[in-house]
Image (cartoon, rainbow, N blue to C red; front, side, top):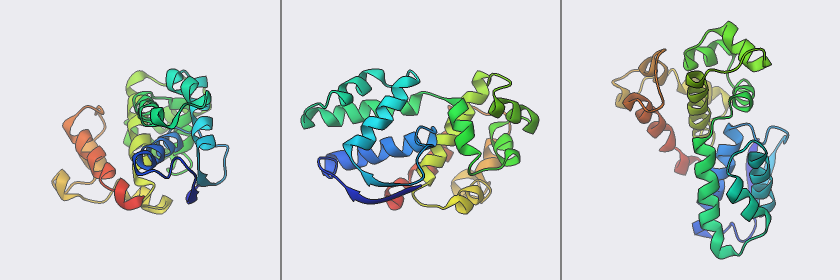
Length: 203
């Protein structure tokens, strides 16, 4: 979906480009851009549409209001950083599960999230509320996937979780996490770090 071919001012400034790309990656991972078939242009209109969609879900409302009011360029770094942090800290499991199921099948996603396939199907259909612990794991998987997305295609994304990593004691991310884990666990922090290290190369 993300195939940036042009960047419009002022987001082509070095201090804004990385922040803007991070916001777009987060929004993709959280399913805030699922209505778009392709994103080729990075501009303030795209950022404002993300802010507006996030705000409708109760995420990053202050930053969204300021961005929609067309602030001076000097305020943009702080506003983009605020929106990015809000997206990173705010699970939206209904959107995220739907987005992740475009990449992973039910079996793989259920295994990563430490839940059953039957339960995942109920969460995806809205027949059951997503428990907090599963919502946090889904959010973690969405954020890791969004970081990996600049370096891998969908096939590569699926394989990444099952390839051994020396930083994980030659275990794969899926093996290292196991079935009963939290995003705050040291092993999860290491897994997230491995994905985040690819962001610069992917960009």
